Amino acid sequence: MVSETETSAIGNALVVLGAAGVVIPAFARFRISPVIGFILVGLLVGPSGLGMLAADYPWLKHVTIASTEDIALFAEFGIVLLLFSIGLELSFRRLWQLRKLVFGIGAAELLLGGAILGSAILLFRDQPLASAYGLGIALALSSTALVLPIAGTKSAVGRASFSMLLFEDLALVPIIFILAALSPAASGDSAELLLTTLWQGALVVAALAIGGWFLLPKIFAQAARAKDPELFLAASLLVVIVAALATAAVGLSPIVGALLAGLMIAETEYHEEVEAITAPFKGLALGVFLISVGMGLNLQTIASQWPSLVMAVVGVVLVKAVVTAALLRFAGAARRGTAAEVGLLMSSPSETTLIVLATALQAQLISRDTAEFWQLVTAIGLTITPLLARVGHDIARRIEMRSGDAQEDETPEGRTVIVGFGRVGHTVAELLREHGRPYVAVDADIDTVAAARRAGFSVRFADVARPGSLDKLGIEHAQAIVLTMDDPVQQLRMTRQLRQKYPALPIISRARDADHAGALYQAGASDAVPETLESSLQLAEAVLIDLGVAMGPVIASIHDVRAKMRHDIMAKGKLDQEPRIRRTRRPVAGSDG
Figure 1 (cartoon, helix red, strand yellow):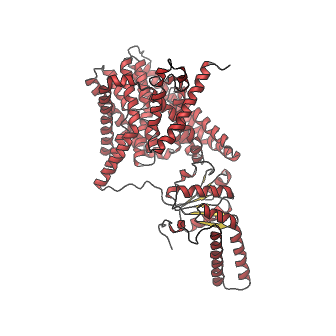
Figure 2 (cartoon, one colour):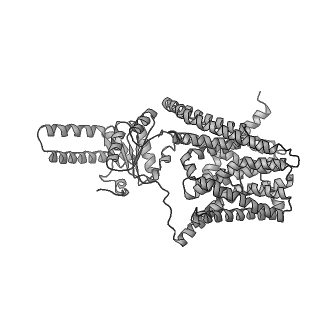
Figure 3 (spheres, one colour):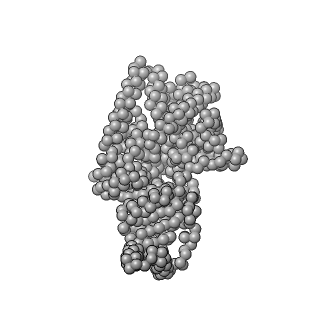
């Protein structure tokens, strides 16, 4: 027999999965952030939405979630996976480069914003000193879960946002301990407990970093050799869960362990494959978190206190936006447009604000009514974050146009992407390197990748059969893509997908024979080179030279025959001799004609 608890858990899972299946495609169609959709679903299916009617209409229990505690664990796991994916996009070298932003502007933003907000609460909300500044620090935190998916970590906006968010995540543990120490019922052991947690946390982080440095390449190499995506996924989840549990065991936030796990894997050859294979889980788990935020919105309370809530939300947004933008400009860390965009993007409270509010309530620093009020402010702020991001982006664009500042070039330099690094891919890469053309190659065989890298070639591990794996290579900025793998079905599928997504991208593909080449041209290839054609031409060239024919006429005749055979293949594929794709090629910088 299935227990009532198990039935409820299954029902909650169905509600969440159903919401994801409806929200993501529906909001994507109208170009609206699914963040808003998930929060609205949480409001609808939560205890203050349809859940209020479940007692009168029992069938509603199957499409509602009774409380946020029912999905809290999944929501926390979503945040852990998000920080893990952020770590995958970074490296220790990049973190070292960001140290001034993290510990300089990040610390100043949190402390100054918290002080101003705390002073305003002390002045207008009649709170005790410790309560007011505790609330100020809580509200000064910004949402890692929403800001980084919107901004990324590679743009100027993303770098600045990530730096400040990283400091906030690191500061979360001291904030919680300090609030606990300020509790009227606190003992004198709080400071000692904080120091113990910090030195134990430092030891755990060092142990994870050293262990990961030696063990992770071996673990993922075995998973790569097995060519089993389930094994890759299992290894990835094992690493992130172990790291999160290790840091949580000594009192640090599990998101610190998740970020560290991502950083360690980012230093290996497998980070792109891991990122691609864990992306669907991250998105779904983040959706669960956003649903829990929506469930925290109580429409009755909002209706009864809307003037105070509106003033509080506007005040928090204005203070944080001005403080963040001013610090970035004062430190010379961003242009005016970028500073304004980061300020608005970071202006809402955070999911960690809810954690700090719960700690302050438990420490008896604030009353339950006060906690519920600021929880509503936080939930409303999270809901409007995508709108603030859009407004910030528009303001930044206007500022840049008016000031005439040049846009930063955030795109990687144009290069050729080679898919497959066997005999053919190796030859193409060698010639590109010989002529000074930038390139990157990918292959699903880790032993091939390791040997190529030892030989000095730019090769990465990636399984192109995995959806989204090529997107990590910056295809939108590539000069061309060369498909060299010996899999006719996969070549046709990839050619078709690439042509639909990148209409002007030159796609050069290896073909088995003339029929395969014709099919590739129909799929959208710019050039398809049959192996049988080239081998016969090379054989004919060798025969003519051995018979004493001069090299010049031989090369000219070979070229003419190749052009005629290509024309016949394209005609067989029902294409013109010079298709539209070939005429839309992008100019290559420094072309030698």
